[in-house]
Image 1 (cartoon, helix red, strand yellow):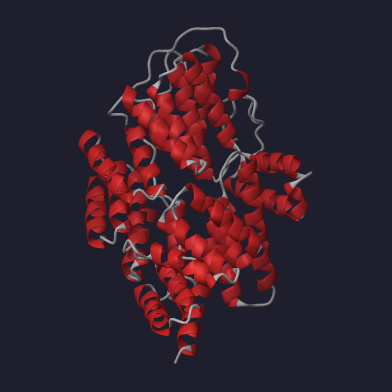
Image 2 (cartoon, rainbow, N blue to C red; image 1 turned 60 degrees about the vertical axis):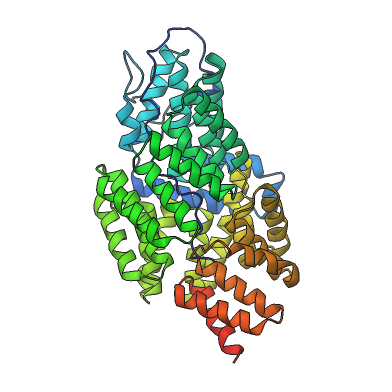
Length: 502
């Protein structure tokens, strides 16, 4: 029953090869750090089906996969998610990927979004120039981006090996340190991400990736004032779309919706690439969605999809708007498309809740299937070094093992104090019958002014559970006024709870 949860909304990756040094000749073996791109000849539909099929096989192993079957099942899913490529240097199409000849990969490749070709070219280049530390750093960053865009955590160990190799060759390589920051953030290890970003900025104070990762880390650690200062510094040193979008998010978290909108509109006005246009337009759509302004959100999502009709955040945002406007059939169809391409916990839970809300024949089983796939993803993520406690807490509190949800929420709160972790801990405590302990966290989650109807709904329910009828009614009313369709199940439950207090 949660509204969309996002991390620090990283903008499209800056090209990490922009200052790549000339290749250095050496005969050192590439070893296990070399992994392939996906098979570009494989139809997109087949890739999508394989991702979800792998998750289904993984989930079907039952809860015991956490123990004896984890390694084998994780390998199965990793193979399917990467289109069947084997992670040690040869692609399924016979190794016909383009080869970089005289220098490191063209910086435009990573920015172009053609990550598979970029990775294949980097691999080929590093086979002939294995001491090119910037090349290894770029490969590591490309793996991080590939894992993020494909929802494939099996790429993170490959990214780690590539980045470590870069640092073995050049210990203070700022690109590699920035890559380590991006990798740590992707694995939700934000204290480590901050440390690596600071190290990178000591080597290169103007490094775009490090400046961006530093903002992300501070946001995800709940250090919002410092994040604002970091955004100001980044804007001075490297102004552009990546900084604008982060700056806007910091403002939104502090309740400055108009300020966030102005910054995002400025970013959209300066965006030129399809990737930047789709990204910023989708962020404006999400901002409007959080305020319950569905028509504006719909317009921005349409603009994002005009730039890139496959852009996942815009597709899922449009599906949410359709659900809120009562177009359940198209909402389900749209979210089914999203999870076929990007089977991550938030999207899987949202599809499951759409099935539950429709409640047609077979929908209960369909919903349960989505929630089982969340558990499969979490297990795979953990097997690849990703801290998935927040994902576990959010999904399990409503649709899984409540005790496990509380355990995960406590663990995440011990690492970082954000509005998102406060909300997750409050709700996990509440569903476990600990409403008195839950209340301070629910209040903390809403204290910054961040407009999130799900947080306010949770606060209202928890206030009522503590006997505070007036405060509970006020919070529930505020949630429904802010975003009346924030969640198919949550909005219904909020209306029911409000009615029961009359």
